Length: 347
Ligand code: HEM
Ligand code: HEM
Image (cartoon, rainbow, N blue to C red):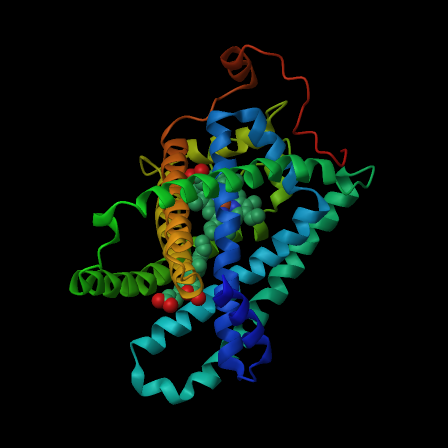
């Protein structure tokens, strides 16, 4: 922990050039995206497992606070992707190393060039939504707290459990013996290459996903009655309630050339992004947390969360999202008291 505090103070004090800030921004953007990813995959899985909760989560996505977060997220992902591409490219081309500074500037420029039109289009979706569908402006804080509180509680529980297990493991001698170096380093070399190759494979997948959710259509379209979800062939979303759930169903049930195209796409995205992101978190933990107990606890918590995200996310994609409101009602055999899709801002 002391090394984390020291790193932050020294980062601010150290007069490094662009390279230092590019490294900091890469780390912050990667970590921030992992935090979002955990919430996002679990939220999305609710479309299959707890439709009403998914509708509530998407209602929170439409609040002003989340809208600001959405812009920040898009900026972080675009910067991380371009900078990650630079890192991967230069690692395999040592002869270019003296041009690192120029390349870091190019990444900033590229981020700006991509962000300006993207933000412009996203802002258009926001303005349309507020003009057409919002009668009363409301920050929607209650909805944001409701959507994020389970994750805050979950984080505390996972960290607590990991600390207990880690403390238990510290009294087992065989688990504390020094590691065999050769085996460890082979694994690390593999992970080093995996980070670069997965990063490059993720670029089209993540950019495609963001284009579909923020540019071609907006986040607000997920709950718009009559909207045809992007690249689907099952007709418009005519659900009278839980439109967000139906949006996911229309996407995941769309078949192209005999295959569930968006299920395959999302499975690939899920595996690559989660393995890449959590291995990055492992690097960050190992860089800053050197105490054996805390280091082991955090790595355990991170690995457990990674497995949880992959299993829950994959199960949600592989099963069917309930088809109709009637079906959902008969499944849950309870009346949905609140139509969580009628967003907190009013329509
Ligand atoms: C979009 C394409 C992406 C590319 C090209 C990319 C590339 C990279 C590269 C080259 C690294 C450095 C690995 C190393 O130091 O060995 C890295 C680190 C990392 N990436 Fe990505 N990445 C991408 C997407 C993502 C996404 C979507 C996430 C989050 C889910 C993420 C999270 C991380 C984290 C947490 C690190 C560790 C940062 C550090 O050690 O400072 N990346 N990425
Ligand atoms: C606020 C921004 C985002 C929105 C509104 C959004 C929306 C969605 C929606 C509606 C789905 C359901 C399936 C579909 O229609 O394809 C989905 C699934 C998914 N998204 Fe996103 N997405 C966002 C950002 C991201 C980012 C940045 C990543 C990667 C880092 C990501 C990774 C995924 C994954 C892995 C799935 C599959 C989830 C599961 O298995 O439960 N999304 N997203």
